Length: 203
Image 1 (cartoon, rainbow, N blue to C red):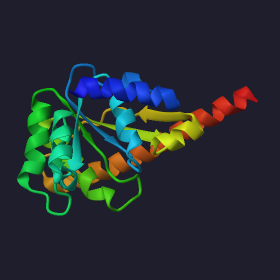
Image 2: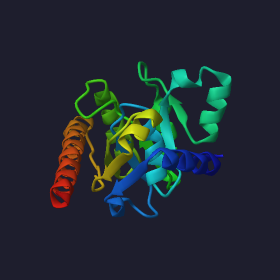
Image 3: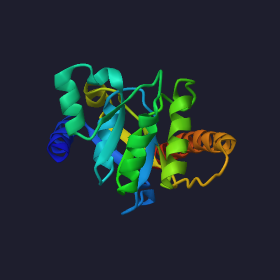
């Protein structure tokens, strides 16, 4: 189901515009990892799935699963629910199990500087520490919907270097949460610099 939906998504996205993936070589090839990505619309979730060559198990808010049909489809495409307001032990347990099986887990904080994204980033760091799987930060720049993609014609996603987390004390996790914030911000700057240099060379 995941491959089928992904192939349909690729066709639709390419009909509306182009997707560019930068620094794809930074993605681990066989090992498990967590990918965190900026999230301001639904299209970047689709494009992240297109950009990563392996199936991604997406962490999604539990409200999306309230509808039985939508919930069924989401589970078939590797999504699993999380209660953002009242996270339970299963919030950590499910992704850790997936990572122990050498799968890829996707977590979408709300944005690089949005306070709503902070708990999910702390969660990503905690999951990485428990599973011993690295975090690969990603930054998305471009349209949020297919309509915007048709107008803008292009979406770009860039991946950062993996972040390995091995700590003994919980209070040490805060420093890695800040590191993840810094790396995401750096990716934004790296992407903007790349696009500016490219535009200057074309003029």
